[in-house]
Image 1 (cartoon, rainbow, N blue to C red):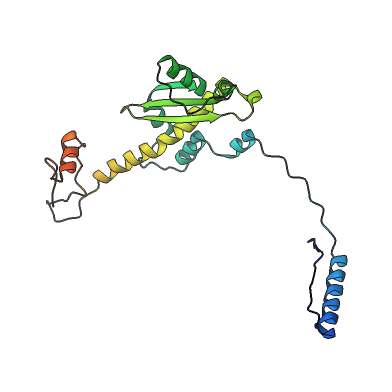
Image 2 (image 1 turned 45 degrees about the horizontal axis):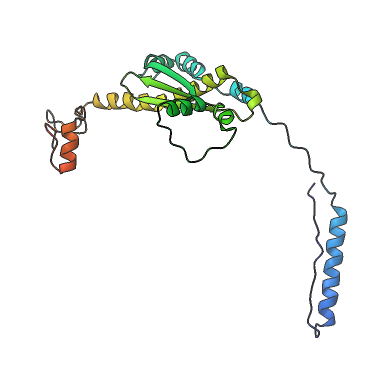
Amino acid sequence: MHALHIQTAHFHFAPNASAEALQGLERAMKVIGRAGAELEPTTPQPAAAHTSLATTAKNDMNNSEIEQEIQAKGKTAPRVTPADIEANIVSEHFFTAQHGVSGAMAALELHQITWHPGGEGVLRLLTFCVLVLRNGFTVTGESACASPENFDAEIGRNVARANAVQKIWPLMGYELRSQLANTMPCTCVPNQGCSNCRPRPVLTEADAQADLDGTPRPDYYTD
């Protein structure tokens, strides 16, 4: 049931306020009082315990389960698979923020604004994962532990890697879509084509310089 909270109000009337106004106010306050007596006040309930991250993870479909469902439903069109993601990773690197600071200090390249005692203990709770892809591009993932007592190096690396892998999906999805778009049949004038359906050349330094100079790119298709 809804709770009604009545706060004491202070009314100030002019000396010449009519008797009818005072009587109307008195009647209104009696109505409010009866309404408050008829409503049963509610007792705040304790907040439910937070669902653990492990329980939440179990409720979410992971990449392997999604792939199994796709195969079970007979979806055979080109797509990015978990195997494609793993095959695109050529090296993996793990370290904590404490390791990064220590390495930068050793190389005399540390840039920091302030430092306070005990900072190293905080930095060791932040784990980084750097994945290097076949084309040389890199993606990163992080894992931060709120309670020092819960920190586990292996769990930190696993979580950081999973977060890094999630960043690869949109990159490879875009690359696959570009490849599919380049293979679409041309709908322009027969045997003429257009710049939208011709395969694009790889961007070169000469192309970049032409863009800066405001001139056409070398060997660039024009319609």
